[in-house]
Length: 338
Image (cartoon, rainbow, N blue to C red; front, side, top):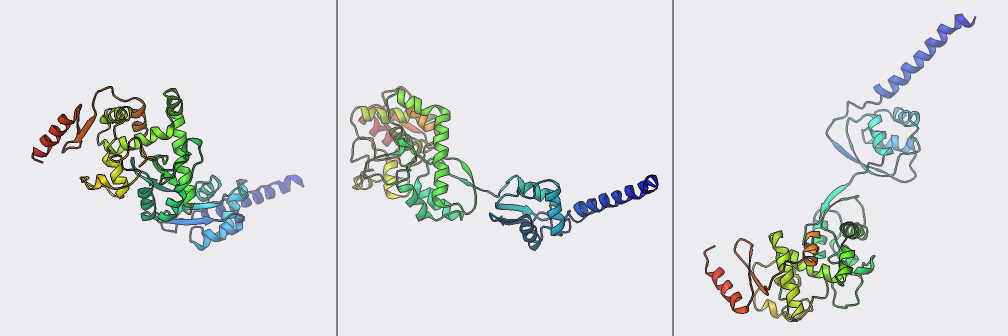
């Protein structure tokens, strides 16, 4: 009797397997939906697999919710679909969608902080790209100091986080708060500094990291060509050693909030703690985000006796040792045809 029933049992199992195959691969292909079209899908915390399947069905990403649930259940991933915002392409199979949701491959937006950008420029760029509110980002940066080296008691500092936003390209989650975005960027600075051994070098040279970043921010903005950074850093360091004003146009542009092609004499008389023409020493704080290269230039400046430099038409600088040589260099450059 068992032998007579065996073929029937095998046939039944075959039917079940074929049915499962049909459910998973025929109803789970979703091939009729247009490929190439991207959809943003938000999976909220607490949503069940059934909730997710219904949401995907409403967005025309999943043809049969039941088949999607079966895919997740049979693979043991029904309770492991993660919350977040995802970018899903129309036409993806249930298997591909389950993979994305179970692995937490959430949708991210790329955002770049260029070298030399300050808090105000970064805030404006964030808002222009629809990732945050400029005013809220500036406010977050005003007193944000998660690491001891960022602390300062100087009341003239515009933003305590200035200079410590690492210039890089970031993958940001849509909907992040301005403070969370700032935290990611400042954490990246801390990570990269430690990776490069900068804190140890700073301690060995008996500097503070805040002062090094302060000086490096000016070096970054003065140098069009990276190879000139160590030479410019040496000029600034020599001036500090001789108690001469740094007289960097970059600090005037920071005060003005705009990049002027030429800083006028009137500009250099603006009353501000950041005016390095009127005040000796470093400005109250950094004026932008220096690259790791600019920070290393301050720690390893090029040995020279230069005290002055002026920009040539092509962005290179002419370096001189005396004020008379400096005036002659300015005259020579201004006398050249552009």
